[in-house]
Image (spheres, rainbow, N blue to C red):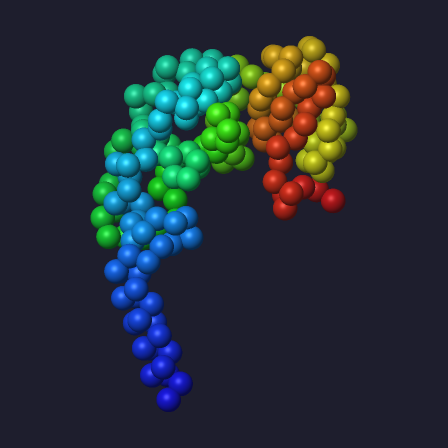
Length: 187
């Protein structure tokens, strides 16, 4: 009957996955645990990450010894050194999603913005929580920023409402272009 065919289909799918059919990323029969050693940053990724973190963090060298970086299809993750082994356990992400390396540059993630304390960040755009530009930023609009409101004139900045991090923005000629996920934007 129907139950038996469904069970056979599930078993067949399981057997195919064990034999090594390509997954959605094109890797054949490998999971994160198996490929972890194969995904260390290359020269291009390392240069992009060093450029970004060197410009954004106050003391970038302080953060290096406490974890390791993993890259999967351009996606960069930070994994604590003391993370327990997950041998045989499938998972979506192992560690903190930092962002993505695209065409030799690094684009930070919202996860990194939420995890990074503003006090450790050298590239800040701090607005008053009452400022109407905070709402405009959260709506996904480009906003004008004065030189006194940001610690840098161009590049990536952590946008804060007071001491609360909201997300990333890119400053270009006094304009703050948001990097705020479309699904999170206010209406």
